[in-house]
Amino acid sequence: MTDPALHATILLAKDQTGRVGADRIALLRAIRDGGSITSAAKVVGLSYKAAWDAVQVMNNLFDRPLVLPAAGGKDGGASPITEAGIAVLDGYAVAETELASAMARIEASVSNGLSLKPLLWGIGMKTSARNVLRGTVSQVTPGTIDAEVTLAVAEGVEIVATITRGSAEDLGLVPGAIALALIKSSFVILARGDESLRTSARNTLAGTVIAREDGAISSEVTLELTLGKTLTATLTKESADALDLQIGTRALALVKASHVILAVE
View (tube, rainbow, N blue to C red):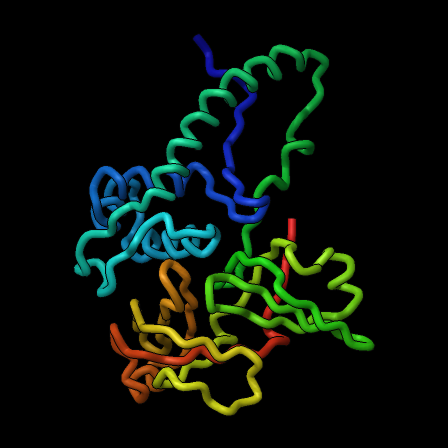
């Protein structure tokens, strides 16, 4: 029996924005079975960092975290999957079964040489921005040219973006709308402590350092803002050392509103 010519890949979407595909589902299953990100990374053939990053992406894209990662890197201990994570796996399994039947019917009906590839392209989105957080628009303050949009990404955690008024209207950004906040890690400035500072940055987000990776010149530091919601910053290793940003350190992430990009489905 030959393989069918037409294949499909499932992307689970939460309110059309939080997407998890087959590769991340495989990682999620491995975490469920092995109980840790370290063991799961070995099963799916990823480095620990790649697996850990994927977990942060999944947690940031859903209302509730799918995995509770242990702080401290690959030696940090167990990382249990949550009830929300189990629900995602169950939903994906049902969708896989239904999709297999649907694709068989579609393939049988395509007999005139029509290519479905252009029709199916674009179902997923990838971005170079290190931080992608899903949230709900809580407030829009329009100006003559620009608009200030406030996105609630978790209870008590809001991100403010400044975009053109025309862009806000084109994207349909009104209170209650679902959107993604994209922030490059190089746009995140870190400071020690957890008390608000007087700065020109519109966003001041308090968190705890849960991961740090050093290179020859730069360091990548990840803060947990609240349960399952993280923000990653890239800074010089010299600066990370000077601030003594170790696991468990309280720190502030400063982000200018103009450095936040908003996206919708």
